[in-house]
Image 1 (cartoon, rainbow, N blue to C red):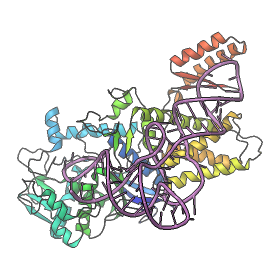
Image 2 (tube, rainbow, N blue to C red; image 1 turned 120 degrees about the horizontal axis):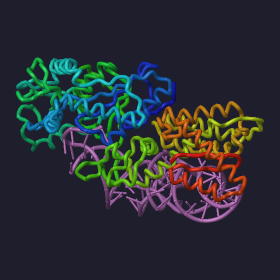
Image 3 (cartoon, helix red, strand yellow; image 1 turned 180 degrees about the vertical axis):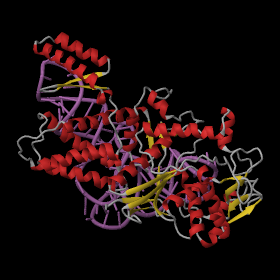
Image 4 (cartoon, protein in one colour; image 1 turned 45 degrees about the vertical axis):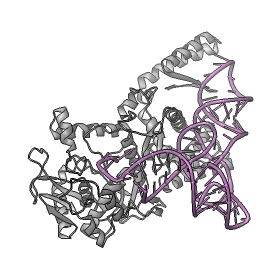
Length: 495
RNA sequence: GGUCGGUUGGCCGAGUGGCUAGGCAGAGCUCUGCAAAAGCUCGUACGGCGGUUCGAAUCCGCCAUCGACCUCCA
């Protein structure tokens, strides 16, 4: 179906992508924990996987895209003084835990929409899959990889490691891990310090709790993804994604849980998106450089000079590879803003392109055909959007030349023109997920008014009344509307 | 301390053995009443040292340096 190659974090190699059951494809991505607003770093990860999802669909796969909502609340640490995140936030805001969940789930969806992300095909919640998680924990006990104690259930990493290898994803070995955990206290219950909770006993004051064979409690964080991916995608599925920071321990534990139940690897291709930094630093609240999507879009943040549109940010993300660290700063945002406009202008010109007489220029023809295939080749090479965008820019230059030559694509065959139009628009909109944000895009009233203004200015220009024509242009510029005179017509653009 | 990954021109950011990345910024030119837009041309690069090779930004080794993870994190 394609020549797609994916860098597999598990093998640490780029591998040819072979789906298990083509044309169907299973994609699981770890979603947010909805106890707080998602920040821009989260947005990058989800945008990356949105692009990946879009490209897989473009390749013709019938993708089941599962992205969970972690709403059960897990412990902030596993050292006894664990606090349930949903509940601690709920106390602060005087809300029911599920009100917190609702509030930030809605907020998350708003952000996804803002950045033009497609919804996953299934968005399961942890609280909706308690039964499956209990079931999985029981199977792990039966298989000898977990034990119940004092109403809690822990995964027995050492027992697991005797039959399978723990740490294959993160490249850690169990002895070094044991070493590192040795001096931590408050985990008397566990057989070993590296054991992690599958089920935690709830204290009487705990609100979010469910009945289980071990008493009232709540599921451990790692278990939900294993349970939900198995339920919707099967014991083995194609792609599992998430942020780099989830590699250990979260994804490592997921692997152990799944292998512990079904005795084989659950995931064919593990993919990890890299982190987003701001001004060279990892975003964090303590450094005061964490940006919320809404702050970026409104420009209401001390480190920003102005507002940047969601598509500018999305485009900035797409200009680098999903697996590279990306540093975001004002200069980068400004660059992206200009670059995006250039690309979207080309799309506009592209749709206006006609074809009259044909006198094919072999070089142009060949160049365009090659660039169109380069788009696919770039994406097939581990979703290399940076390379794709380079090809799109070069195509944009061709489009601009045609446009300047009286909107005629006469140097290329009709078939090539069709290929160009389809390829360009498809990659910009469907694959990269960009969209036109300009108010003019769907404002016919404004458009009519502008045509009138442009008409009046045209007359004054014909009368060499430069004072009037320049006044119109300058006043519009102050209003954020840029006038562009080409040889035979005038257009406008809202900045 | 352990694991993993970076270090590319003024800035951002692809590239992994020989072939122009691309964008933004800068210089010049074309078009134009002027401007903008667009096009053309141009410059500057691969952290350091050593090795492998006919040939290395790309492979290997060492060093320097930055970062992520190892505790919740996209």
